[in-house]
Length: 286
Length: 252
Image (cartoon, rainbow over the protein chains, first blue to last red):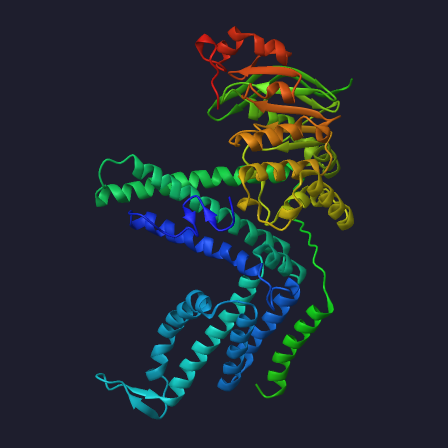
C-alpha cells in the first residue's frame, strides 16, 4: 500500500453514512493517517529535515524548555516567531500548522485561560459587554502567558514530529537516554493502535453490510458492546501472536534498537545554538 | 544425514481440544518438507512446537539431538543457540513486523542474539541487497505492499542465517506476481543447504518448495511421501479435504 493510503481511501478521510461509533473510528483512523502524513513532510528538503534527529530533539527540546522558563511576553513572542520562521524554512505551510496545531491549542488553552481574564485580581482595563465582569490587566497577562506558552511549545513539538519520521523520533529518544522500554512501548503502540483501528472499522463495516435496516438505539448499544468485546479478544490474540513472533527471534524481555545516524558539524551547531536560548533566558533574568 | 527434529508420539492440546495427536516425524538436515493439510489440521501448531514457541503435551520433541523443552529454552545460552539455528516466518506479516522501520525489523533478531552493532549493520545491509529492499530501508513495514512485507519478514528471519527455516503459509494472500517472486526466493540460493519446513495448502506451488510432503489431517499424519507421490494420490487428497470430489482442488 503506498504512503498515505489506507483501506478506506487516501488520507483515510471519513466518508459515507454511519455516525456514532463508525464515525468516531473513521475520525481516529483519519487522525492516524495525518500522523502518517508527517512522513511526507519529513521527506522534504528543508532546514529542519536535513538535521540529525538527535540534534533536532535536543534543540527543539531546549526551545520548549525556554518557553517554560521565560516570564516575559516579548521573549515568548520572539520564540513563537522563531517557531513560525522554522516552519517556513522547513517548507511547512502555515495553513497546515494552523489547522493541526494552532487552532486546536487555541481552543483548548483558550477555554482554560478565559476564566483567568476575570478571576485574577487587579485593575480593570475593560468590562465584558452584557455581563459587566471586569477584565483585569494581570488576568489578561496570565491568559496571554498560558495561551502563548501552549501555542509556542506545541509548535516546537509539531516541528519535530512533522520534520522527522516517527521511527527516527523514537531512535533519537533512545539516543538521548529515554528508557528503551518506553521507546519500545511508544513504537508498538503507534503501530498496533493503527492496526486495531483498521480491524475495528472493518468489523463495523462488515456488520453494517449485513444489516437490512438501521438498528434502533438499543440494538446499536448492544452491537457496540459486543463489538468492543470482540475487539478486545482480538487484541489479546494479536498481542499473544506478536509476543511469540518476538520470542521466535530471540526476544527475552529486553528490547534492543539500532540506529545509523551520523552527526555532522551543522547538527552540533544547531543543537548548540538552541541550547544557548534557555541559558540566555536564565542569565537574562528570565 | 543427522536428524534436525525427531518427534515421537507427540500430542498437543488447546483448551478447546486436541490439535495434534500421535505425531511421529523425523526431519533430516537439509531436507525440504511441506506440511500439507486443510485449514485447522494442525500445521501451524506443529510449526510452533518445532520452533519452541509451544511445547508438546504428550510424547517428545527432540531438536538437534536433545529434548526441546520449556526448561531447556529458559536457559539463556540454550535459548540463544536454538533461536540462532531455527527461524520461523509467521503467516501474517502484521504479526511478525512490529518494528518502526525495515532496518529495525531486520536488525531485531541479530540484536536480541547479542551481535555487535557493526555485525548487525553489515548483516542488515547484506539482506537488504539480497532481497532488493534497499530503497525501503527507512520505511515503516506496515506501510509496505503484501509482497514487500513478506520479503521483509523472510529477510528478518534469514538475517541470522538459521540452519532451519520454518515457513507458515508463505504465499498466502499474495498477488500472483508477489507469489512468484517469493517462490523464486524460496527455491533459490537463499535457502540452499538449509532445512526448510513449509506449512501450506497451496498444491500448485508445493513441488517448487519441497521434495517431501507430510499430510496432516485432524491432528494426525495421514501420509508421508515424496511430493509427486502425494500430489498424484487424488483419493488421499480428497479424503483429507485438500481437494473436492471429481479432482477439483480446494484453494485457499
